[in-house]
Image (cartoon, rainbow, N blue to C red; front, side, top):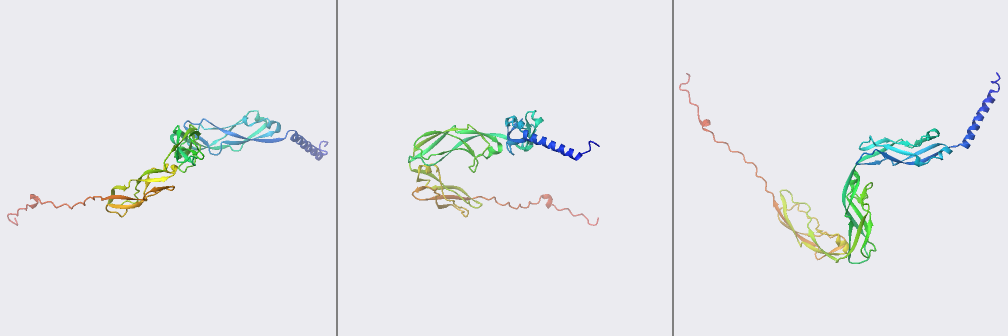
Length: 338
């Protein structure tokens, strides 16, 4: 009975002592956390494939333990990897594996924010493309045309097949505002889509080209040929076999930079839907903004129309004349009733 006496007081003292020990430990050796952003490494990537992390190329790792142990850790001691040995073309969900010093396991808890990552594998494609130079602005000198020559004239783009197929041009842009003479500059070629937006995740080789800019004196007028624009064509069985325009060319006047962009001048659309024979049409020119036509703004278009020959319908076949056997009558019996 001796040990049972004052049992409540003894238990209270024990709990108090434990709490005091825990409190002292928490003050001397507090539990803290440290979070690191670890880049994800790809292992065993298949050749000729582009690998991209759809869910981000970093993972957040938390290290938890006593302060003196946590404070000895650093991000470069942690490695996050994804093994692509069994990955397939397309999107994959693969586990993220953490590697860190083995002694950490005795005193620290290491956890990753996410255990898996979405990884995309797409076939790599390479394409050689010429460089398109896009000039903007106006040089200080008047009556000149800026001529831009990239060296080299083409680059090689490499990346995921879907991104390479989106590229419609590789362009170099340069603002000529304030340009007073010839010059050479280094420029970065940019792959762009059909909408003119940069296409990302592509490697461009070389990454820089040399752009040579020459200011060439130019006149303020230019002669360009005329191209008739035939809209609706005649209805079947009629068709256009020949057409011509008079005059064949006109003179334009405008700024040298604007005239440099114009190589041919179209007419307004000509509708031939209801035409069944040769015709001569007076039609207006489609003049681009920023230039003017020297002389008349209308031309004459001659059109030659023919009718397609339709095959004659098949004729009904005539009956064949009877043969001798068909016209020969059977001989009557010598005596009826025999």
